[in-house]
Length: 287
Length: 286
Image (cartoon, rainbow over all chains, first blue to last red):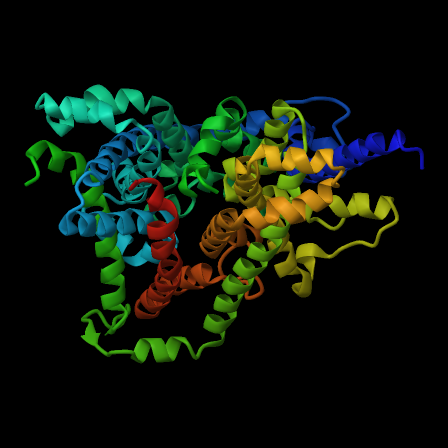
């Protein structure tokens, strides 16, 4: 083989491999993109990988009518949940940061226990809390209410917020905080004036990570909502599963409507989401 | 002593974490009680519920599914993650790298319920991906239509959904390795493949630990995907422990549900606590 040709062949093989991986990975989103625009008639005669011959909005119109209420419900739940979780979590994270100053045995034990707990809340299979969670929400009289769902989500996402923010706050230079402490400033004030503003990019990552997690949460609305009017988007889309004689343009349009917010966030602010994901593994530091 | 302001900082996180702990402990306590719809006054029965539930076919079947799914995903996710991370590492453009990385991570931004709905159609043997397979001369694959290929289909979707996590951490690991070593090797004419297994992989122990722990935890808690793919909780070929536990709840076998829930929590905790205290936290306390 000609020596000059080899780098070219290698580079093309490299891109070929990347292209194959990408095509396989993109098939589902490609199917979702094209099939929502097919007409009811075309659905009956074309396979899902073939693009529509004519773009119609039949499916989107019919799906939006029934998903409008769930979409609003999801927004009412997810916006407060994510902001509260990220902010209160950030406060908790700063507490871990201050604990790491003192090397007393007691504070390190407190820190160990609390950190184990927030990790447990972040990674536990939420399904495992099914019975006590349902019982708790019912006994508070909050079944089928916005507050009830938000409260249940906060049990998992405030700790998640604390875990992620711990990662982002840990890079703030200690000297800044020590200087403020010398002046006799309290921790709460230091958090509001110094730590929180300085950790804004981390806060946005945490916020976006929790928005996407909470938006896509399936289990909590599945068990804490019993009336149709309170359904969230992640549950409402189930009525478009193929089992009930649904036409597939409706399924894909429903999937798109349910995913447009997290997908748009991922496309435009993906680096923040990825940073949030990396925080689950120690922020990618030292890996 | 701690000041009031400091306590206020941690109060919300501590309170909500304490509620979670309360839920977990309540579960564990109730799993030692005899409690169901017919028996509304719980009485202590010790391990009786456990000994009943672990002898049922559905319990072992669903636990095996959960463990098989997690182990297979850890193995395939790590291998594929290394492969994809290497493809990305040897790209010269940062922009191309982050674009391709996004392509393998985007499934995580869509709800698993929606992912499940999409794959239900893609797995349709007449109009799904089989249509393409048949057109290019490959045999039709039965996917969810045959009991023997149902579980592999679930594994396939899980690999598609979660491999991005492994690719992300391997890529971060590779990027942290001293560039001068890699450059020197390239100037010596070392092949990319050799750089990968002589330099990159041996220096990626931390990436391996993180990818393994996260792949295990994400796949062990998987619920919505098999729920949607099997259209409920009772398909024994796709039933995971979480689905079985939810099924026990819906038929009001409350004690058995709490026993299964406690075992699930225990298995997850064995991974979570050491992972959190050794891997994640050392980057905070420095």
